[in-house]
Length: 131
Image (cartoon, rainbow, N blue to C red; front, side, top):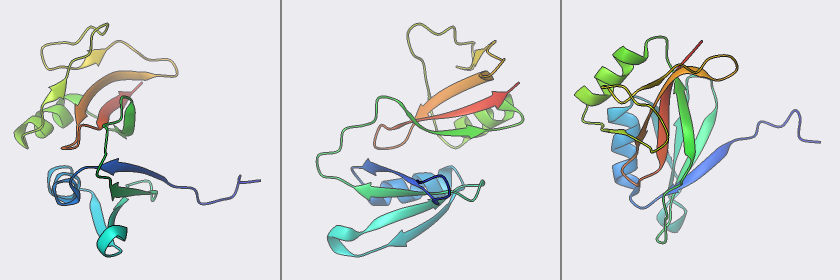
């Protein structure tokens, strides 16, 4: 039924202006603003051409799962650049993180290496290098 639909995803934040700066300035994504007043939101345009809606929510609770994954060719360079831009990597129990905060050794159908970080609203994102 929806196989050909141009579906999109969305998530909430508690501060739309902080989200605009983070996703636009820090991560370098194309960010557009849409709507006004209570209907104000951001549209993130990803490198794949997909779009993601970001909307303010007064009762925002950060997602406890990864909402966006950013595949890269060189995770070490990406992690170094994130840190240079003031982003701190997260370390989760049960994962063997290296000194840089990267979990390595996946592969197969999963990533060969992955590192997690959060946006200003506490939503979880990842940078990953596929096999």
